[in-house]
Image (tube, rainbow, N blue to C red; front, top):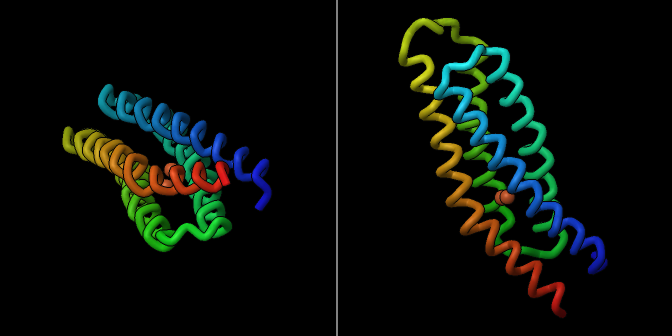
Length: 138
Ligand SMILES: [Fe+2]
Ligand SMILES: [Fe+2]
């Protein structure tokens, strides 16, 4: 892989992290304020676009440059997807909106995402980024 391409993906991943974190925070606010279902679903879909693109880019990069923990990276991404799908299911198919636990559960799921992201970005993603930086210096 050319250093130029490597640098571009590297920069892009950083931007994607910001977008994902912003969207998850918006989602938490929407769930906490018990915004209308349509608004929350829109944010959930936006998050799906960002996360799908981002995980694909990171996994592609990790594989391309021979990052040793590529399988671990995929496993952790799948864990996030699990929480994400639970939230989708919760919003799309459960209609007990009047139950106060309905919104509490969604806040709980989004909070789990925020905590997961904080952990993942500062551990495995950071290792990947450090590995890329070292490669760029070669
Ligand atoms: Fe990641
Ligand atoms: Fe990431």
